[in-house]
Length: 68
Ligand SMILES: [Zn+2]
View 1: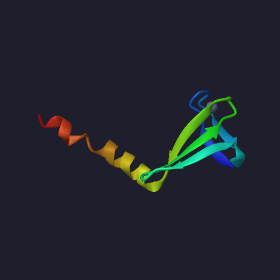
View 2: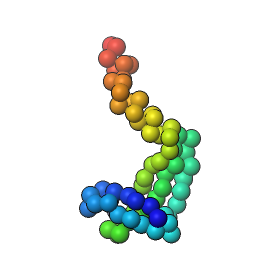
View 3: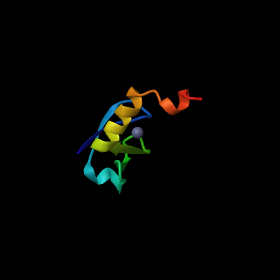
């Protein structure tokens, strides 16, 4: 089972593993394509490196953009 937050209905949905259409491995994260009870297919990204990269990006206000 997998707990997802549907971007359409904005509710938490518990979906069965067989609802996972595909799992794509990327160097920084894993992309899960999940069939949602709302009828759509949503992509969820998971992985430690993905999370830390997102945190780092949020903490640092892109210095290359400020140096003109
Ligand atoms: Zn949905």
